[in-house]
Structure formats: C-alpha cells, structure tokens
Image 1 (cartoon, rainbow, N blue to C red):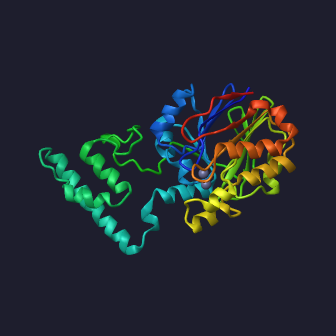
Image 2: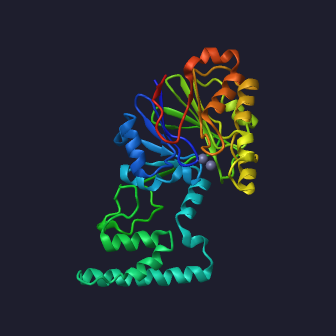
Image 3: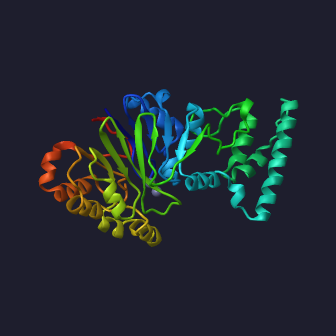
Length: 341
Ligand SMILES: [Zn+2]
Ligand SMILES: [Zn+2]
C-alpha cells in the first residue's frame, strides 16, 4: 500500500506526503511550518508520525518551512549535498556579503548582544531601542529574529512553531536535527520505501525528481523542469501514479503580467514545463501505466486549471477513458484528497 497526499502545489509553496504502511515522508516543505501542520491535520495526516523530509531543490517554494519543521519534529532531512549547501547559503547571508557589509553586520550584532545582556540584567530597561530594532529590521535576516527573540522571548516568524525559545534563542536557522545526503541516480531507502532520485533540468544547483516504491506500488514526482529529457521520460515508465508539472499555458505566459526576463526564465530549458510540453509527453512517450495522473505546479497567473486538464485529456486520447476521473489537479490553496494504491 502506498499513499500520496499533495498538501500544496504551485509557485507559492509545494509539499507532498508519501507513505507506505510503515513509513511516512514529506517531500518538500515549501509552506510555513504552521501552514504545513494545518494542512496535514486537515488532510488527516499525523505530523508526529513523519519519518523524514526529502527535498527536491533549494527554491523557496520548496524549502520555506524546512528548518523550523525539521527541528520541531526532530526528524532527518534527506537532501543532496549541493542543495544542502545552497540552502545553508540562503539562510546564512553573511557568507555572501561583501567584506564591508560583513563588518557592518558584525558590529551591529555585537551591539544587539550588548543591548540584550544589558536588558537581561535590568528587565526594567528597554535597552533594545525602537530605533535600533527598526534599523535591524531592514535586514531580513537572523539578526532580526535574534534581536526580537531576545526582546520578547517569542519566535517572530509567522510559523507558530516557536522552538526558538528564550533558552535556545541563538538557534541557527540552518541547524537541522540530522542530514542525510543522497545523489541523483543512486537509489536509497527510507524505511520500507525505496527511492530513485533522478536529475531534472531546472535552474537550481542539483534539482531532483523521485520515484517511490513500496509493496510493488510505484509513485513518481516530477515538477520544476524546463523540458522532458530522456532520463525523466525513462524514470516515469511503469509508475502507478505520477505527479507531473503542467505549469503554464504558453499564450497566457506570453501575454501575461510577468516581466520579459521572468517569462524567458519560465519558458527556458531550465524553467517550468508548459501544458503543451506536458501534453506532448503524454501523447508520445507516456506508457499508459498510471492509474492516476496528478497535474501540479500550475501557475496562478499564467495558467487555468481547465486549460491544463484539456491539454492532458486531449493528449491521452483513448488512454483518458482508462484513467476516467483519475486525472487530478493539485492546487495551491488547499490539499488534494489522499490517493491510496
Ligand atoms: Zn517550484
Ligand atoms: Zn524551482
């Protein structure tokens, strides 16, 4: 038995829970911890039984809640080494600063620390001045979190998972309870789920799609890819369920609100899969084995669910009747009913 529950899919956040009888894995944590917990509860998924978090790539719509959720649940994160490093860099702004900026930040942090110590020894003194906080607030980084935490004892993030308490206010945002590095193309297992990670063409450092297998059931996840290269087509053979990207309608994207540079990025070979490219795959390369096809990562600005569905149905032709109503669309706003095979 395997189950897939898409918690969210789209450019504002992605997360899917894959489980077998014994093992439960979250693939990507692209919403805040609070929202992920809320959606899991809504979908009937027990967050406390998650065994691991698995990451496709470091874009924020796939990792927004990663650190906080992993620390809250105290579960390991499976991630490729380049993606892990990129994620650490994203949450460690100091390492990418100019020397002058770095010096400035160090000085500012020293001041915040001194103020914090002063405030602790004299609780009546509001040592961290409003002006100082406002200055720190212009930096969207950990200095703000630490200073606000120090001042209020609360985690200032909106995720509600306040594991950064007074006693551990210096929690490093890149700290994870445990990390396991995997490599694209090398199979590994989490519990009784066998995982085949495959490289996808996307503008991240080491992006991956996955095939999951347990008890003879195979489920695949392939979103965030600019086109369908042979290795992805091969990975999507003999699967019982596939979550496949159907990001944009080409005309809507061309005429839509995005700046030209962003349009070019989305359309490029390392951008996102269009309805047309998705349909071309289903028509020419799909082997017809899946009981369910779930279309995902639909753009809210440059796509319409009916267009994506129509493209897929037309491409499937006779195969569509075999799938019947088992062509589903994952959405950004809410979870999709669990699919059990
Ligand atoms: Zn994405
Ligand atoms: Zn991406």
